[in-house]
Amino acid sequence: MWLYVLLVSCLWAAVWYLRDRQMLSSFKDKYVFITGCDTGFGNMLAKRLDKKGFHVLAGCLTLKGADSLQRATSPNLRTTLIDVTNSESIRKAVEWVRTEVGEKGLFGLVNNAGVANPIGPTEWMRIDDYRKVMAVNTFGVIEVSLAFLPLLKQARGRVVNISSVLGRLSGNGGGYCVSKYTIEAFSDSLRRDMYHFGVKVSIVEPGFFKTAVTNLESIEASLRQLWDHMTPETRRSYGEDFFPNYVKVQNFIMNIICDPDLSKVTNCMEHALQAKHPRTRYSAGWDAKFLWLPASYLPAFIVDIALATILPKPAHRVR
Image 1 (cartoon, rainbow, N blue to C red):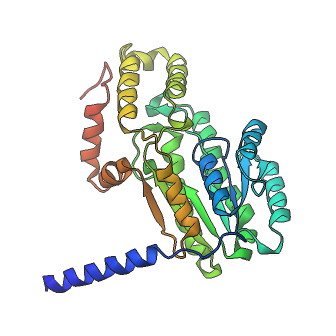
Image 2 (image 1 turned 45 degrees about the vertical axis):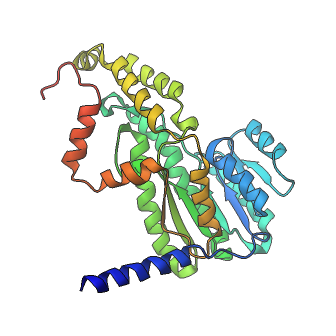
């Protein structure tokens, strides 16, 4: 019996391997729109797809980011400004893309734009802190996706949504983990609803990488602002030593696990756009594959104990 199980497993692995490596023959008639191209993953992806012959339509938040990207790429790459939290900005971007793609439609939409701060203990947060992050990471992704669906259906294209391993396991408080959990759910629903129209939806779940989102100075400044505006009663419950200890532990962890090689993420994005059979989910980074994702399948109490052991303890804790 075990021999049959082994043979079936090997056959399945071989078929999956061969299927996963089947690529589209040409990209020269394919248009891809990417959000968040000022820096980081989006910027690198735009440059790499441009070199491969895609018609890259890069959405940037700032004119400086758009100009810088345009100078670093070929004339085939076009840029536009888009604020994914602004409905009018999204509408204008859709009209611009429609003019660019013509009858071909939009082959690829990469929802890459995202923010993280503030992140930290949940009790430190205000409701506006959640709204600020989710306006970009959740509602921005949803509104952009819905706005581009007619063009994507026209080309039988594909959507690539950038989630995170923290969309599988909440490692801290704040809107970031919440927003990425919602991206997981939205992407699953969108993929199933678009199945009959030939539109494929993939989710990329990066681990920790050195980008603007994980900039330690920015994270610490955001935490300091939350700490300074906390009520005296709440602050006393944590103790004055909690803040510096929390920052110290966070910096130590981030310095260990943050990977400087952004290509591990853009490789996943490229495969989702180039493969004949893109995967439903991509895990980018060794920490994602061997730490966060396995931890997400463990009993919750084990993860709770591990995080409670690693992070500093409040002064007036009861356990």
